[in-house]
Image (cartoon, rainbow, N blue to C red; front, top):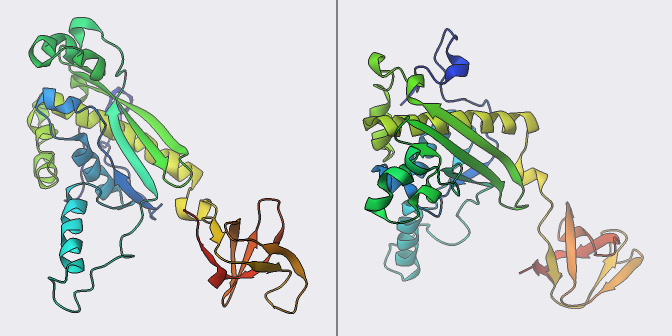
Length: 297
């Protein structure tokens, strides 16, 4: 699936010569897991999970490496369980320490989730059919005017910093239905389990709004030039048995201080063989032998 483009992306792009497409990057900014929002508002619209839709955009953009934390993870865990029970052949090479960590988590959701705008939104139209309070859950979608306001939140897993929070907007008049602007979407969306976003007008509007938000989010990431793995501090470690911190990576160098079991230290990333340079909570810096340390829990 290549060249994913959308006709008439939004009013802001109405006069451009070429329809916009999924934004692309010339490098990866880290690994990314897409998480479903807590309220499954999409079922009231007979749509697939927005996570499936966003994965299409992420894959097309080449800005992140996708890691599966959904059905794929469940299947992988089942395979690992078989390996750990001894059911798989020798040399299968499935075990602990192989799973790639997610640097970012991306959550697609609705804007104005806590606003009930009466009959103009999906809650007002379907509230009597699908349960009380739906308008508060999906207040960002209007069936009457065929508009959608969505939100994408990109969070750094290690620091929990919100790297980007973007709102996307789209309306039916942006789409150019008569020209079949979404004709090329069906195949790609179907492969990702998001075909309903191509098959209905409101689905197309929602897909458009999410692309608007994703384009803005990629712009944020490019501007900040963030690299989550490198930008965050080294994970802390704990002292496992009595040890010492030295001024240099040498047992004969002066001692900075004694290290007691349970003490927290922070590796600087500098290493010489088994020696690690660390700092303590008081700001003292020095070298210690890594065999006396373990990752803090």
